[in-house]
Length: 309
Image (cartoon, rainbow, N blue to C red):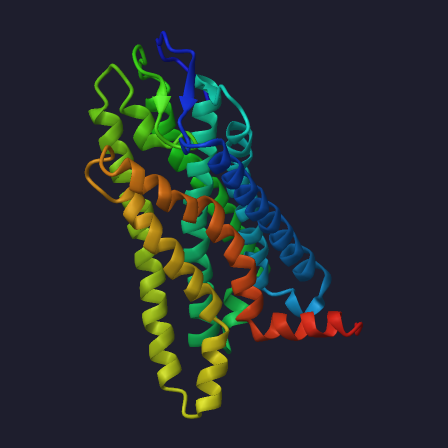
């Protein structure tokens, strides 16, 4: 990614969370605790899935990709936040800011794509159980996972390229704890209309597009489950997608507020607070949601705790 901006500002200051030293230390402990649990929890999911034959299915293959994504997503943001909380300067170079923005939003787009892919996987499993293994074979699973990763990186390369050409010649304080697009580009001394429109259109397409796929999949899923004659059968079918549905509700609820809005300059303080949910809390919750709400994973964990193989 080539940086071609003509700027007199070589570094930026991440304002983060202004306040007393006690507040800074408290936030440092909070972010460190959440980050550590996030990494350990998602690594545990990957190890669990890769080491148990019962979990060698497309559903858990996508879950492994999702867990790996959560590790990288929170790593792109939280370590720099931890360093700034304990630092006086809180500075970041233009290139460093651009790279952080690129990776945070790339991983965010990948998450939308993976959630849509996982919804489609559950749609096939519940609506076409007899043909599921034939349709969702290993080749298709790999193609869909790789497509999600590649697509996420390609989508963000467009706004990142435009931002790299902006000029910054005045204030250099970013009102956020990481290089978010919204509070960053308002500091530019050049016209940002094109960047604003491209960001709005691309985020709307990614978010709403993946949301439509997920919503349509669940309409068919719920319709199929309601036609199952036995209550036990309905409960068993719903349990296979309840974890994913919970994650979808949490993720889409917060990110639609963050990105699908006509003015990216509005409500920066509120945006900062909601972003904590996306970058720190949600990646932490996902491992627990998938383990505590998934009967198959819970059964394997119980065997492990009892020392069984």
